[in-house]
Length: 207
Image (cartoon, rainbow, N blue to C red; front, side):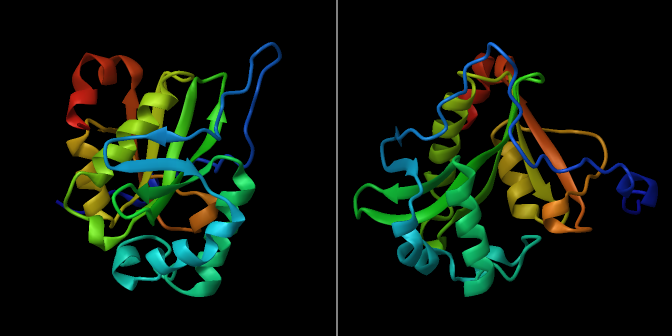
């Protein structure tokens, strides 16, 4: 079988450029600290630049990512500044060593659809293949489901590693391919995890 038809590429989903709130609804707390057994997920600060760049300046981390140049200082600076400016960005702190080992953020909170994205995630290769990815996702999903019913993840069409990781934690792939302004014409899949499915057993898959 061949790949998706070109018509699938035209089903573009416009990138959400700002958080949408509705009158009478309180804003969720996007800047809290989440603590797990081996990782702390805390808000990113400008002072994290040098250590986070050291953790992320590895070409292998970004090899199958739509922004494969993110290991370079200019591209990583754009990524880092965006995380700080978003008000929803986090760093991952390895508890045994107190070193920064990655980053992620919430994005595109839509109160009307009760949906938020978790994305812009990377983890240093020293922590691949263990429990770190599942632990940070569980911490962020647990918090997200206190204020939304659905969490989505955008994953590049060629990013097989992340697609496999999403399937393992119970993500359901939406039909079609999507493009977003932030990564140009690179096609993405969207995986979603619903609150009900997560609470009925999906959470155990992230343990």
